[in-house]
Image 1 (cartoon, rainbow over the protein chains, first blue to last red):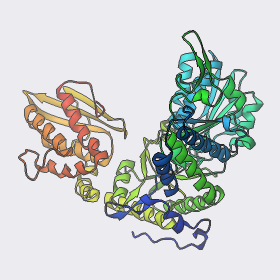
Image 2: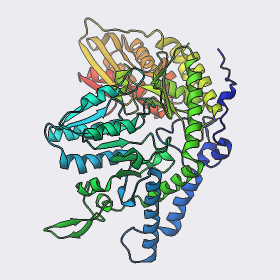
Image 3: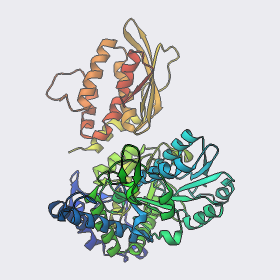
Length: 419
Length: 150
């Protein structure tokens, strides 16, 4: 069977001038296996625009020194650039104050920071932590570690076959011992967008603080932590068109202040003697050691870029890509789409008959198409669908409807090989 | 340039659809399990060895096409061979899959197995092809579990 692209006018993307935007991403010009790269793995890591690459280069060539330390001019320039990046993250998340933004290595470190800084300080035996069936391992394992250490208990919000959390069951999980909630904004494996505004209100009604893992949401949806009223919000720089090695944790100032430090070292202290150490103010209390300065500044530039394009426009464009991909893939016999929530963003997980997802990934790679194949660091999600792994295509602002056509054509070729 | 499709077409048409020696031996005297935690491949081998010779061999498990085809072809080829002969094949297969043995210009005993030479150009899939051979080695050594994650 030969794939024919669907010429449906409803799928003509008008939200973004993608042709123009693609020119901002140098890597999109390269070829893979002799074919133009079709990058459908932005949920694993998004590509960086030239503006962010160039900003990091300029920092390194003209502005680099250690931050918060020297009296010399370069240190001041570097500190200003680094703190300017913090302000950009604050504006991106709609936080009230710059000091509520902690630079971390990524969302994983952000969750671990809250587990150590809040969980280890304030949770004890018999206390309960609520997470969901949709979580990435990075929002499961730290809480399991805390449970093991403290004798706390993990409660898991179940989901339905579509991959939507059951809000009635969520409500029922709360008890007098519920002390914390940790929840993904968007599922990395299925793309489900959780109704976090409502779920945050529920947690607060029961007196529990709540952390939102926004790693998969920040690139796709406008976020305002003050409107959401979440206590913590975490995201990774490299998923929102910035570099790897940097991310941010938002925390309400009152909570960050009462938390214990995560790591000890330089920059996180006010005074040190062998008898006693006074910790620095937030956010520096949580930023021990020399941070990833160039990466943080690159992230700031990437957020400027995303802001200039417009997250609402990006969301609208990606919604078109996702709807089109869903329509095309659903029409291919033996393709099973995994995760059919009403509200989805960014990703489409699927199986091709009984072909192993790694074989799908290898054969698509022959066509220059990069997808993710595996358990997506969400093995409990895979288990609930009775699969070990899925193939996953994910979208960014630079993807086109023609690339979705190429994906569908590639899947037809996979089917042909496996006859 | 890697041409995965050529590799797949040669292997899959045959061994993935109709794997040879698929199942469990009732009279096995050696067994080993192989896991590749990265992709979830899992195979179990059962062998009957007598007088240093592989009298019979079977495999079972869930895996990608490369691992399944490699298992199927391996079992067909080592059946009837001595353990020493199989150990030579294990070594040569590993070298071929990791690009250390050039099957066209160097001596080897791989025969039909050289169809897997192309996997050396797919670094993320090398382990899939090698897993059954690791597992066979583990069975000889009477190691209970083999894994690609040493």
